[in-house]
Length: 517
Image (cartoon, rainbow, N blue to C red; front, side, top):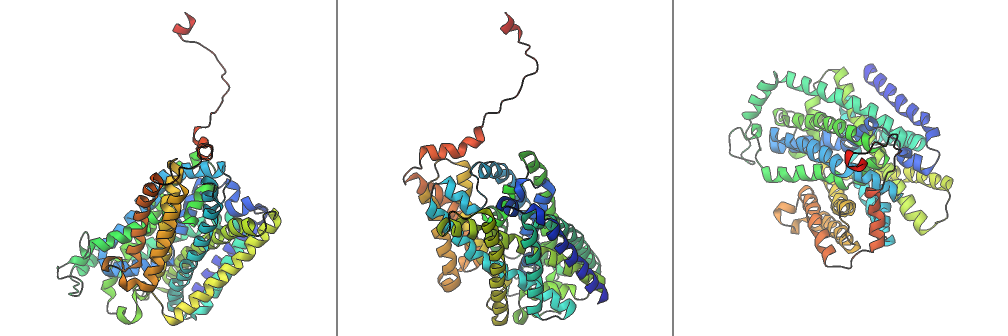
């Protein structure tokens, strides 16, 4: 216990210390929200990765999908690395960095407002962001509480409050730069921790081959009659597994807290470096989480999934580890959760301040007041999410993965297609954006309240979210082709940043032979 508590105190001290160290670098709105657009590739890549993976993935997704699909769940990790990281950086990174600076937009709703010349679009995007980031944030606390209860036997509410307060302190003090530096530290902890945990868990089963052999002998007639299906390449249910891969991978393209990382990176050249780092980070962390979860059925004698839920699987797998390794695991998941929480509260509070309050209520608000409002809303947002997390925990409303699925599905479904087409296609219209916004919000809200009326495949929030994202990619261009064309000057002004002429000084003027003749 002394080792666990000591490691936690050191971790908390470092996080808070970084926050106060960065306080001077958060003196204005741009510095507080985007780090002055001067964040290096390593910090940006780790900030992207740690915001991507939290207790939701480590405890919720790894446990649930590892149990359902066996070792095939690792496809979700592969998709996270290739589609959610590599391709996201290649397709979105450079163009996002250039156009957002050109349009002077600090948030995704602000981008929509200026790219399409629509105040109503900006306000709608702000409302969607604030509304659907809350269930995602509440889900972060839930996964963390399971591990704290296992390691320290601490009440859930205490875990939630400690994590919320400490995260709020360093975000309020240092803004984006503090979160980026802490994300780097937390990312290193996550890499070391996941490798150590996988080694320990497989070691307890006699090694990788022995564990795989034991998994091949597990059968569940309720899932599949195929022998060895949980150790197979595609698992017992490849169709639903594909939905998981799409939502957790393609979804990052439309999440405000993820895309905002591209706004802050230092330069185009830094994006190339960040692409490699981010992909490798995702391969290790996401791949490791789902790989670990794939062996969950070997611990079926330690957990009653029907009574305790999927969220109890990973804690049951870890409960027999040495105390030192459990302390590492707790800090690993704490790192993942705090980094994601800091990203969420910063994205939500800055969006509500810059895109809603300043726009609607106080258009003349100066920088100091905007900073005070952003910091105040960070407190409000954290408080709301804490209350919802405690209510959800005590009423057992749903699983972690389902909470995250609703949030990701609504946000990514609403924003992915309009943002992607807005960066690349001049023909994208406001009507196309509205169609994507309304379709995804309506579908995901309906999935919560009348999900039983959906087709069997879409009753899962995971599949419904993936459906919304793919539908948006079709809806936006189709609606755009049959609605009023965007203002020509507005579009050309936005895209002029990609064709900017650069003049350089020529030191020598040696003409060709043809020119001399």
